[in-house]
Length: 501
Image 1 (cartoon, one colour):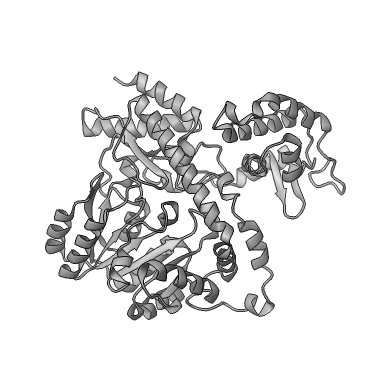
Image 2 (image 1 turned 30 degrees about the horizontal axis):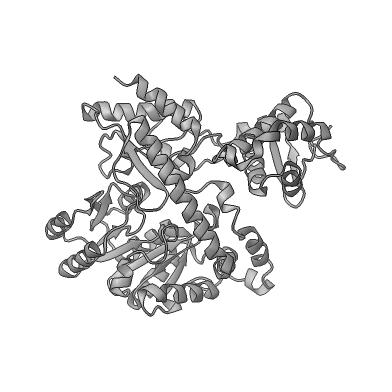
């Protein structure tokens, strides 16, 4: 049988009956608060077994997500996550508009040979290459996004389908240099609630926050300029600054917030062009700066004449009422960067820069020079999702789920003997590690060695040195609480704790 028969056979009823019987009495909500993750594993395991044993042949069409979910009495999001995992493992193939099919083992081998051979050794590049390779069968305990099933609860797929039905003249043009006007109007209204009056023409749409960083670096700075950054902080920002020939200067960020005395001292010494800061849910600590600190930071920026670049990507995971540099400043010295990869979908790649009117032309010129306009289809889809009243309810559910996961993960890590660097206020992460590493070199060896051992067991950890500006030795890791609430990680850490000297 070929991989694409004209009339593909359906999955045998015996497989469905067996899976239904296996799940049986395990479906009661009270039995396991983490049943979603375990159900995904049971479904994928049962399908893999059926394929290996020849019960499901190449080319067999599987039940639709909705049909299988109804048959098993579970969420469509759980089935969708299982199918997606199997596509990543090349057990299934997804055909647009036709559903999911059992993959030919011969074709899977041929495709695997053509795939990028990603490194498995924990190195400086490992986080950016492997953590984003979601097709790998890894428990992404150190990643920067929500589980797939959580994203499935918003209506992005329907919004994307609607966005592709735009009139032909829109598809035949590059779109506005600042981005889709409907989304900029929505953002202007939303931002005006907390920043003061914001005009749509003060907003430049981008391919996510990382692209926004590029516009700011190239539009406002010159090679050799000093730039203040949080330490620990966002690892990719540090790399971007160096790529542009800028000089990142680290400002310690701890459980107490920013070291403002160091901001004052280093600003006097280096005369920085700007400071990049995350007010809410900072990466990697997931802490939020106090209002008093924001006032003092603004005063220092005024005194030493540098821009404040506020990375606001995590605000929707905290809530709209958290303190804001842009809100205190009114977009005079502060530029606010945001995006929707954390809440709508990582693949949407839609973000924005809200800036003073005097900077719009310079930043728009960089955008057009480096990549012309951004995707109007994606921007229209984002606008539809954001304008739907159901999206606010979806965000509230995400916040509640993250809060519950944070509590469980922090408690679990402390039970094992790991100590948090800071108790997270909101957001995705908690940073924690063993507190008694005897030396810096042994700490690095332990952190990276432990991450290497975790990969061998299908677990992706993010060692803390990735987030340090100088990449000095650490004895801690960044955990994503939405993924780290998993018995596989807990078992691995318990075994690792027993093996420590």
